[in-house]
Image (cartoon, rainbow, N blue to C red; front, side, top):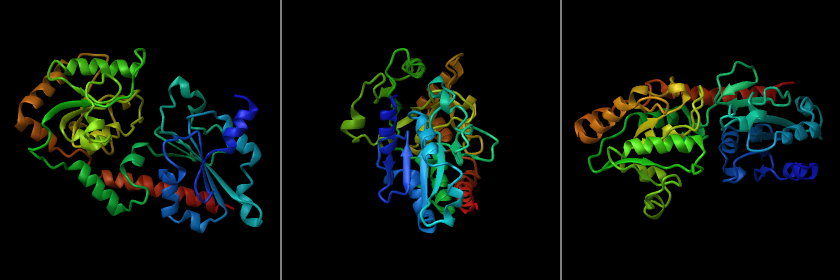
Length: 341
């Protein structure tokens, strides 16, 4: 990347309408004002209390040199003294990892940018012991609004955990919604093998680009995946990699839609403090799955067995406290950084 291109990208980040929050190497599907962290900072009063603050977020979907350029133009140690002058501004740099940084494509971000001293706070899915790091996995952004109170979090967890059985729903077998297409893509290969195995029980409806065989998600449900999935008993939701702690929104989307998740990832132990693994079906892409396939066939063909499995608590009893702890630690840490002299 040329210096001119790098500088052009640096000068054109996703920017909140008030100019206080910038996003680099971020997902570009939504305006900055609609990004979860923007609302989190607004709803918790950070923008009102720290009017000189600039919150600069980085992620891994682009060149790490944008961070280097930002730290060169705005030396990281200056923001802590900004309150001493009228001209200076606080500049808080936060890295958020929503991808599997252990993949070779994300090598510059493997250590969650903790090797860059200009990063004040790093957030990700890894279990890392570092004073500048907080574990804050991607699924929180998908399942819990940024303005959530403890009561809100408890209510959402109760809704996720205790699904109401409705005999008028769940008339269809299993769905897959996946964008993987390349024949050499490992994720696509794993999902294809899983679908082919399940097709021996009942044909799987594939509404994404991979193995596409139904247009209903778009034509009937207007791309509302949650409503689309309410027809199905099972949902195929493996991760793209099996790395300890790496849990995205996939298994939570299955739970939120009331489907039984067929899952692979997180070294077979996704969010052990939050999820009830007994309510999840685990697929092994590198081994035999005859017992699992037999169980799925029995659940599909026996309504009472399926209902018994379906009505298990999907989450641990104290899951809401775990989630509330993530919110509390993030808010507290940002406040500590802004209050440093």
